[in-house]
Length: 424
Ligand SMILES: Cc1ncc(COP(=O)(O)O)c(C=O)c1O
Image 1 (spheres, rainbow, N blue to C red):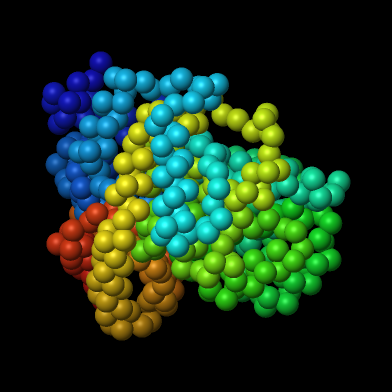
Image 2: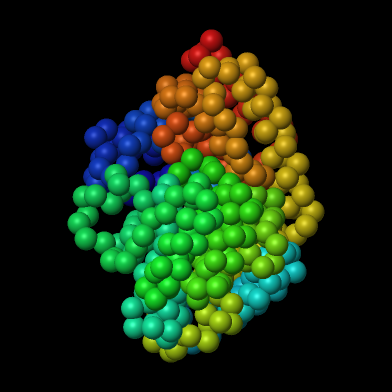
């Protein structure tokens, strides 16, 4: 048995062999072989095996928004685990009743879904989207026998299970897996609204829902223009098509509002929206929020999950909601985003040949290069900074929302140095 807590360096050395050839893990990830994360604190990650520390601009892919090893999160997990971890969805538990109430109330008071009504709790982003798709289809089934199709967008990412994969456009993720859920159509978000309008009107009797990320994450960090989301909602409402916003990556304060759709006028708010990632700061919990129109279409037995809505997740997410669902905290995210954008803009000016675009909102930022920045990512790692890509050639910055200004500046200095070394 490895005693990581007592002697991290020694224990990590025993793991060295496991770093080669994926150890005993299946080969579905391309991971660097010179990196083994042993612990984290705030916006820093540590590899005790190689005696290295990193500024973390990835936050576990937009998950640990309150920082690694957040003390209050750890305390709550510890206390709650001594009280009750799991009791199933056969019975109510106080923690998830409290969390659901908090989500609905904060959503309404902080400019999110104005008619937010009910919450379905589960464990992962993919599952939250599966629930959203099923709820939309159930609503459609009450309006017509064929109304179960879903519209999604090119460049989207909604998850890896067969249902969520059906609405994820990337052929690399889809092709090897044969037939997916039928009835999905992919449109191009950059098309004119008239194209959507024609398509949706024509297919009115066959389309139950439309799913969109207000800021496309994995696809390359593309904020969808407000007028597009406003127009889409209007067209969908006129044709009884349910609008789902996937806020798994861009929600929970990441864009500087509690939800990305809170940047939209009320009439463009979704009927359903989903959250995961930052909701549990790393503890697996996810949620699907619906308005009363959707809730009234649901019946006992329509959906379920064993782990979803457990008190451990409920307790921690309740705390995360309290911290992120606070106007001062959200203003801080906007301010930090501006520091990022300001420094990255200067880099764009210095490297007009290599850097194509700077996009983003709050602390969800993408810097698009003209070519895949593979060498840059590994140079950053060598120098002590973790960043990830999005799409084909975009570097994605999604640090913890609690990151300090000094960690932002330290990380950006490393990034600038790496860019200079790779491209100068
Ligand atoms: C927008 C979006 N939707 C869904 C998912 C899937 O979430 P999970 O990996 O928790 O299943 C992700 C994960 O990256 C995502 O970014």
